[in-house]
Image (cartoon, rainbow, N blue to C red):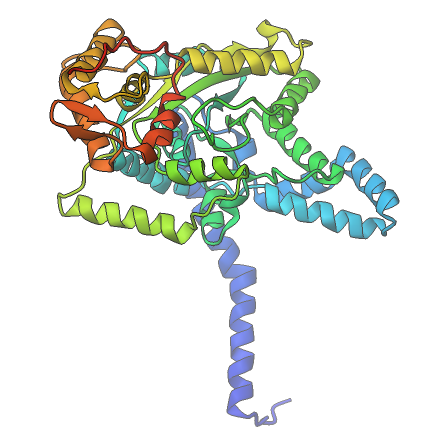
Length: 456
């Protein structure tokens, strides 16, 4: 027992390394994880005292546990058996497929990432690119919702900046759980987005097994009171108008509310911009009749970094205003639990249109397109100013803000982009930019602006 054993140095180092890893994994790491988890729980408890709607325990559950719960859900199990029968594959193969879907969908929410990094970055980016304008009753709308109800924000989708704006503006209310499409699955963006609590959806998937896994996750999240955000149009607007709503996710939420007897309150959110960052990419897709967007994530990141660099050097001009208005909420129980989902969707989209903020660029575009002739410069400005004075609340005007100064900034922005061309005392529209102006004008349900005949 006391004899000396000789070992090669490399083998001794390997044994020590394995021993260190074993010790760390069995004794050190669990203690460290416990220590940090206790600190995180205390931080979340403190954070919840400042939020209108505290973070739900469902959202803080371990991702592995949620994947297990979803994979072994009775309804998912039924779908697995049906899939195995139809596809003539073993049930364990079907189970692994369902489990893969669950891993893809279930987020890995981090309160530290969301509130420590995400909110700060969203605030910085939103205020760097735009003058952010909000509805005067936005916070009151959220505060009016019963704490026992599940809140779902229903938003129109103009730009990928929509995520940033609403995340920033709802920061005092709660942590939002977004349904995001395939674009967000790009590494490393996917890891960040999942840690922010978003869940991925395959918009083009029509498989019954995938739909069942997704519907069960939405059901569990709704039952757990998770505050969600849904774009019912199913994608970015290609022509600037509100697109007809798609029933998928909305149906899952409604069915969950019916099944568990929990009230679901839908808050319509209207978003509009003086400039949509992806406008030309979206218009090109609209002309082709597809949704294949040519912009790569590397190009988008390069664009953002360039603008941030200009901001640091004091040479950056914002892209005008971005407006976000919360409409009157709709309680599912008050609306009618048994009413058709289509009726609910139509009412929500109507309320979004009713509170759509009027940005100056869309209003100017609407007026300029009223005739094919060049417009008198001063008349164009005066009519836009009159529209603001007549309804300052719909333009989200500040108390001390000068309407004329705001219009002139929008005009300067349009000239800089080449959307309009000054010719003496007239404005003319370059032929290649008419579609761009129409794209922005489409965002408003306004009558033609009463601009008089062009000056001679």
